[in-house]
Image (tube, rainbow, N blue to C red; front, side, top):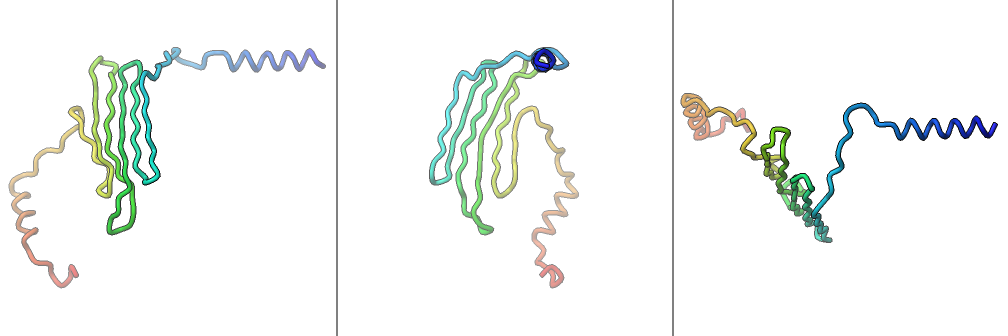
Length: 131
């Protein structure tokens, strides 16, 4: 009975130790890390990995007409499989998440006729139906 139990434990350990499908991933050391969390709701964190990955973020509590909320701004960068460094900066607040980066797609410009129509509509007084 004990030998069956021992064989079962050894088999489970062997299965858990076996590599799970795919190539083995190299562990990346954290070479720098900083974090501050304050009682007033502000915070800051940053880290840098041994592979060149970097991230940082700052946040603060903010009062808006709709109530209290958190705003954050930060950035991160990493080296892609193609060897290029990709970076992204962002702001997250009552207007939503707003990323910016050189590699992000950019919307085409508004056609002049539509821009003119939008400018005209912005000057038009609200109608009774809009109220």
